[in-house]
Length: 302
Image 1 (tube, rainbow, N blue to C red):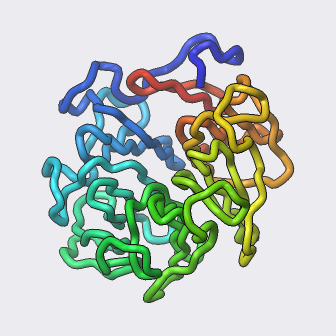
Image 2 (cartoon, rainbow, N blue to C red):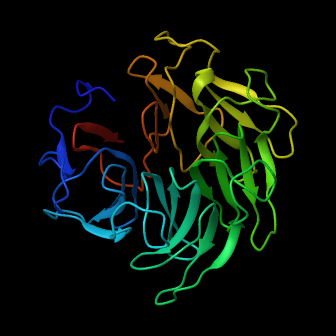
């Protein structure tokens, strides 16, 4: 989002702002944020290979996952790209890009396995498999560079499987996933995706996904064989109907309630409860209107 957003004049730094580094008041290439109900900001610190939590009005953060540096062990990450809080289990759900895995992690310490999603309890060293765990590949029980996540109230986990060009749904206790969007190879047809990233699912089961290299946002009704273009066309651009590599994330969807703001960069719901950005995603509880930024990035809460 542009720092010249007309609705605010001054931003508030809530995390980082002290240059790039490893100190607890610094970040290194933060790529995704999640804000919970008490205004704690969870950040996927891509360059520092960890997840950091910043409490409201604090001067430094706390590493809540991956405090052992870059690696592929159960207590490490290699460039995490996304973090969300699963409210049903009170755990973190994290995409670990270079290790090609997705993990569940308690809000403090936990372990996991490569290429899978696991659920963790406080104090436990072994997890319960939720999805994957069968190596890198394109079978229904595998992932290939999972990117972004969504979990619904039934604890079904949706994963944008970026190199398999699909969004997978793993129901609770399932042994393999279900293709919820894409799955017909790389391409720009309505049944295809090209590097899917941000994903969210509404209460009806409709999947919304950022189709990055097709420069569009698509939605797929439950059990549909093809999707519909919601925003954008199959060309990169700055026009009102175009997107430039959208990598958004939503947490709530109110269908038929979108409006464009700030050129083609952002979409907002007309009831002003959510920001849908071409650069990131933010969980937005019902806070007062304000802007915040961490490092060089600035986001508007409405």
